[in-house]
Each structure stands twice: as C-alpha cells, then as structure tokens.
Image 1 (cartoon, rainbow, N blue to C red):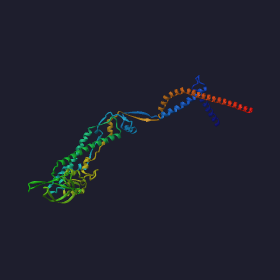
Image 2: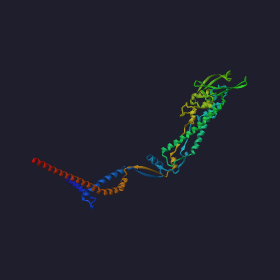
Image 3: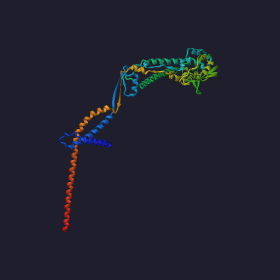
Length: 458
C-alpha cells in the first residue's frame, strides 16, 4: 500500500514537471523556433518571479501613514489618544480663548506671622504704651512696637498686592487653538504661575528697595532716637545731636556714615547717662550706664527700624519659653501665643520672608476637565505608521505587476535572440580556430616530408 502511494506521488510529480516543461507563452510566434519559445518562457518565469519577490518585499517594508478621525471625543478618549499618539494627535478647540480663573485658582497660605496675634491692633497698642525716656536708646523695648507695626504693614501690603495681581491674572485669557495634552497643559500652567510669582516678587522687592532708599537718602531722624540723640544744652542754649554707634561683628558702626548699622537686640536696666561737650568736635559725648537683662534671639536693633526688621528673624516668637521671658519685661507679650510651624527656617530673616511674599503655599488648583469641556473639540484626528499591510501589498502587486509583466514579455524574445547570436559567434570563432589548426598541421606535415626527402637524397 505504501509503495502504491509513493508510486502515485512520483507519477504526479512527473506529470507536473512535464507540464511545467511544456509551458509556452510564445507558441503563436511564427518567426521563433519552439526551443527558443520555451527558452523565452523560462526567462519570463524567472524574471517575473524575481520581480514579484522584489515588489512584495518593497511593499511589505514600505511605511504607510493612516489617518483616523474621531467625532466629539470624550476626555477619557482624548487622554488615551494623547498617550498613544502624542505627536500626531490634533483636536481643534471650538473656543480658543479661556479665562484663567475658569481652570486655575489660588488660595495662598501665608506665613503664621501674617495671621497671628503679633500683628493685631490690640497687641501693637499694648507695646506702644511705654515711656521711651525710661529706657536705654538701644533697648529693644523702644523699637519693638515699630517692628510689629512694620510687620503688620508688610503683611497687609503683600496680601493686597497678591490680591490685585491675581485679579488681573484671572481676567486674562489662555489661548490655544488645539487641545493640549495633560503634560503640555501642566507645563503651560507651570510657566504661567512662575511668571505670576516672579512679577509679584519683583514688584515687592522694588517697593522695599525704594522705601529703604528714601529713608537713607533723606537722612530722616528717627523719633525713637535710634540713629541720633537730640539733647538740649541749657548752658549754651542750643541742641546737640549725637550719632548713635552700634557694635556689628565686633566693630563700631556710626549712623552718621552708615544708616544700616545694627546689633543684637537686648533688654537693659537703664541707670542713666551723662552728656559732655567734646573740645575737638564740639559735639556731645554720651556716657551711658546700663546693665544687660536679656538678649532677644534673632532680633536686631539699629539706626532704622525698617532695616533692622529686615535683618531680624522671628525665631524667638516660635518658642513659648522665649515669649515667657519677654513677658517679664514687656507685659504686652502676655496677649500672644507662639507662632505655629512654618516651612521656612526658624532663623529665616524677615527680608527673606518678604522676598518670598510671606507665602507658605500658593495652593493652586488646576482643572484640566474644565479646560477640556470649555475647549470642547468637535473631532480629533491622528495618524499612525504601519508596515506589512496585506491590502497595501495586494494593491501594489496589482498596480505594478501588470506593467512589469508586459515589459518582461517584450524583452524576453530579445534576450533569447541576443543569447543565440552570442552562441553563433562563439561557434564561428571555434570553427575558424579549428580550420587554422588543420592548415597549420598540414603545412607542418609537408615540411616534415620535405625534410625527410632532403635527408634521403643527401
């Protein structure tokens, strides 16, 4: 049984082979022999096979770009598409200009000092009830009320400036013709917030620097006697002005030459002072008699209450024990409790807090869903590249193969003729060579016979 099956298979193979051998695409050609027709047919089959392989390979490896349009996409679909096709996705907005406040809001959280009892009217009023003549001119109790008045003013100014800037910011438009992906949306919002913050900070720094410049350039005498001591001298019937000197890092600094002189804030037990006239300069010479009671951590005193406040830190007012020590000498501190925690360092200067606008957190809220709903794209279009597309391969074969087939059928007989001519030329060359060889052999034979005859005669 197995032998029969094998024999049948062999017969079928032979029949197929004989059928292929007998295929003739040029059997109607009258000027060509059957052998040449069969040879031309083999050439056609070979070239068509090679051409078909090349066309299929080229069509398979060629990248085809496909475009897809999705009408009225939802936010979920848009997010999925923006992840899969981030470079080709295009969704045109129906509303291109959107107010900032429609998708972005702020709720600034300020430093605890700006919401504490330390800047309340009650506390500041309690600090103001002192008699400056009872204290040494460098005593912190003289300047403490001014410091907290300035803190209240700075907090109020910063809040007002931020509110005004946010009002202007919210009234502006965010313009996009295409729906932004979440990543691009977040990047754009980050840039807007960064620009808003830098603008407000620059305005605040400009205001602060301008205020300090006015105080310094005008040489204003402080009513708190922190930069000059004014003293009436009855014997000479005139007033004497004596610049105050402060010890900064072990060196003396005079308010006459430097309005930014300051030193560590302290509380003193003032025992009195004496004023004598200098024989060389004519100015009064002050001799002060004090005993130090308490050093206030972080706070500074100096020529200008404003400049000393900027260089001071609020670290004492975070501590209950420090406040209790202050209560002994300044009873108004019984009205306040320690500051709550802050992300700023405890020893951060007020100038640093001011440069950061006393902001703990901006608490911005971004609403991409609101932005997408307002933008409301009617459709989204994306493109993608693809290889090995069966439909593209079939279309390419159909469109190209016909032209290739005509070309191959046209040139195949010419190829056969050229090959036959080459064979004919080769045979002619071989025939000519054979004749030359026979002639040469015959000539050589004759010469040999002549030589033999010549030898015989001799």
